[in-house]
Image 1: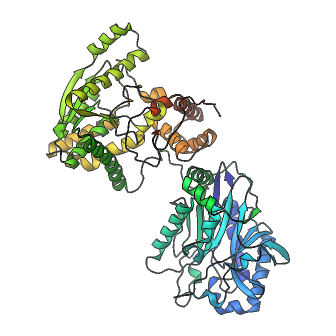
Image 2: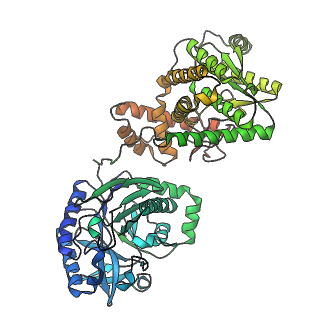
Image 3: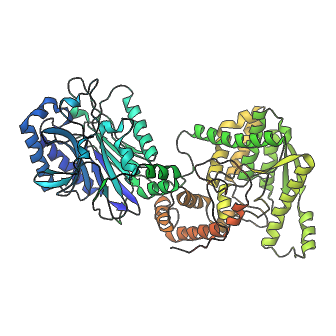
Length: 639
């Protein structure tokens, strides 16, 4: 039902027999059994699901209201579901009829929530039968129903683990100030909506956007369940459009116009993520403080399921777009280009200097520099690119770097670093036969020293190439490749660098070159760069980065869940095992996790001194935007 902050939720738009509550309960019990078999924690039925929304004037008949009560008793006596379900029913209170949601767990009614706002225009005329609940909840927080005292009105339902939910009904969502706003600001992480929304052309798109945006505004999970085709009558057609959304992302959407009896749909809500986003959002906290109100809190219970199974595959590369790839690429490219263009315009330094190694990062930086020059109407000869060869530079990467610079039409110079570094070794008394961190970092710092001094000489700007993953792991030399005058890739992790280079290969080769032969060579060169093992190439034997610190795919996964979701190590480890099942052993994943955290904590001093660079994603490691961490924080292993 729930595990490590995940909550399995469900909707069901079962076949309804309008005006026959007992027949409807029989079908609902089957849906409840399916939810139980699937280990869901919450199941939502549509509005007035006990009797059918389209009963119309039958709602005036006493026999129907009696059957509603009898059918609810039958559901309570036979309910197989250990979680919480929300059903819809008409309830008479002091001779007024209210359109209500009844929240049930096993044979107990946890609470009853009335519909606040009644549509009474166009095809809807609920005020003919119902009284809106807006006023009565000011006077009653408890009513008698089926011979028992039941909490009533503005309610939030709480679980000891920290899961909380509130309820609104159909039209309540569509009004300018919805009950769900008040519920969310007073602690409800999840909103249940029991609905019967008819279908007309394009309404499903509006409804989808509304649910998604509401979950985004409320920083909440939103479970919306609407009545299906068997409610259709006279002029109204219903499609059973159900949606489950979380903080702006649509997790699940039902097939519309289905004629199946049950139509049970499941999704995983990440309650921990919701709560993290609320903690992190100062505007949400301020709004919650401004809207504190008395709302009765009702406890409920769920069984923790250590054999929890996810409805969707856990994405092993969460930074990388999976849909609308061209749009995603162009938007991220334009963000990076706009940042660089502003820096060029502000400084008046129209010359861009960049060290090109033939690796992914410098390749992306060079491609972006070329596009930015085109954007500003500057000749690409204003880009001065250098291959700065060291002790480990390979023939493959050197060739790719040279081919790349030639087809892009930038100025190109080749510098052999080795004599300069050997001279430096002599100065500091280092034996060049000792291949250690001094041996490696001296090369990285000498490259940066050369580029910086050349930039002064040429009145230019040194473009940095390092990415967010390297900053997270500290896989960069302090005051070496860690430093530049503008770090164009600092806002994107390694997996996204690969994505961007691949999209350049697929989409931009012709635009970046002047003839078909060069376009073909550019594509071939980028393909080979993508296929080249990642390496700093600082020693003259094979030196593969991912053999030393672990796979970037795994480290980016950890980085995403740590920064974007606020996940602790044990939860990340759980997700890693799910995402990389069959690819890495549990022991190897644990090793990578420990490497990441050890390096992340020890290398903050490099991030504290990082140069400016464009923020591209929702998260960043810049100390000026998203991440402010003391350089001397202690890491305590928690796994």
